[in-house]
Amino acid sequence: MALMRAPLRLRPSPAVFLDKDGTLLEDVPYNVDPARIALAPGAGEGLRMLAATGLPLVVVSNQPGVALGYFSEEALDAVALRLGELFALHGATLSGFYFCPHVPADDGSVNCACRKPADGLLRQAAAAHSLTLEGSWMIGDILNDVEAGRRAGCQTILIANGNETLWQPGPLRVPDYIVGRFDEAAAIVIAQQGWHAAHTQHLRAVA
Ligand SMILES: [Mg+2]
Ligand SMILES: [Zn+2]
Image (tube, rainbow, N blue to C red; front, side, top):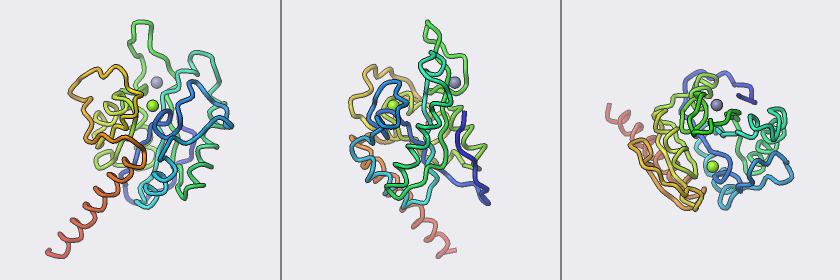
């Protein structure tokens, strides 16, 4: 499910995919009340830093509260709106908000392609926004975010803030970077993008 209109992009661009709850926002389970939406520690500064990279910023979120009947998909419009306001307050633009409205079965199995650790949300966003998944980033607070990013071919950053408790291992559940806060994740993206830009310039210079 997507709640933003995709812009026309002349050339495919990498993006930064952001988990919402516990990564960008303080984790308030099943919350859709805009008044109770608050940025996580370091997220405001981190958004300002990510905005400086020029990369599209796309939120990808599991929202099983829809299938559980706790709230409607329409209620997420207000969440997306508030997210957009918070991005703007910190000089950033919310390029897309993609969510999985489904719920896992009682045995834990998932019957959709979008619930993280699947990578369907990232692929939906990539198709709609002309994004290249290779070269993109996924930032999240649990290993399911890491796996979704790895499945899509992104570089991954885990914010190890205590929200992951199971640490279920797997070859796709190893993050490229582990940090403690959102702004530290943003600093890694900046450093790597900066290196990439400088390296590309260097290659042009010697060509
Ligand atoms: Mg999370
Ligand atoms: Zn789904």
